[in-house]
Amino acid sequence: MKNRLKVLRAERDWSQAELAGRLDVSRQAVNAIETGKHDPSLPLAFRIARLFDMTIEDIFDDGESA
Amino acid sequence: MKNRLKVLRAERDWSQAELAGRLDVSRQAVNAIETGKHDPSLPLAFRIARLFDMTIEDIFDDGESA
DNA sequence: ACATAAAGTCAGGGTATCTTGACATAGTCA
DNA sequence: TGACTATGTCAAGATACCCTGACTTTATGT
Image 1 (cartoon, each protein chain N blue to C red):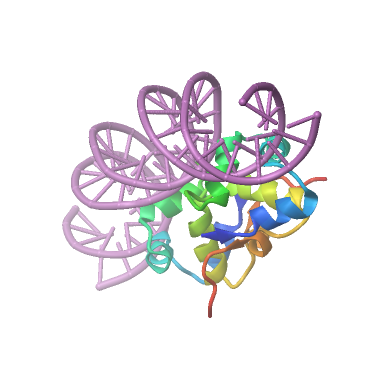
Image 2 (image 1 turned 120 degrees about the vertical axis):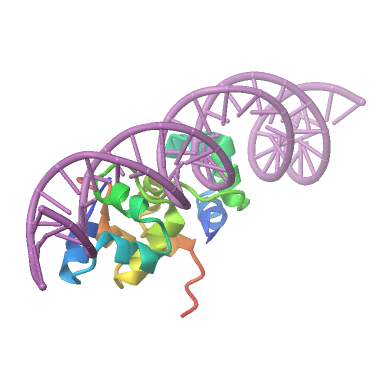
């Protein structure tokens, strides 16, 4: 699952640690999501979307070709 | 995390087993999500949303009061 | 009563998503 | 050089998500 986390974070000039703090998860969890090591849980995806005031679909891409 | 899966399924007159087949998961997984035992993974949430032609936010409710 | 379908639940097991703590690398700056 | 920040990574462990298989309960219909 691809995502735009790194770009959204860069736009706000936040470190991974700062984003992690705002999401109430560990810095490693943010890093793992950004580097594609795993997908966030659905509750975490909701927190991410709300933090950036976007929909989950705006931020995450499950390969919605068709 | 609350969800409208049971209602959406009822509107289409699908059994849990039939919905599970369409989502390519086990019947127990569908039952567990409907009965609130656990949330779907993000990839499964995307499959659910696409199946019903809705957004994840339309189907799942993370307590978005404010 | 009997058969069938649907829904709910449990056990046991596998993999994914998180945690804390530690360490390496690269970049910036006094 | 030395201190600091940011990022990436690893290990070990807790818990969540999903699996198969089995079983019970409830409802429907013959």
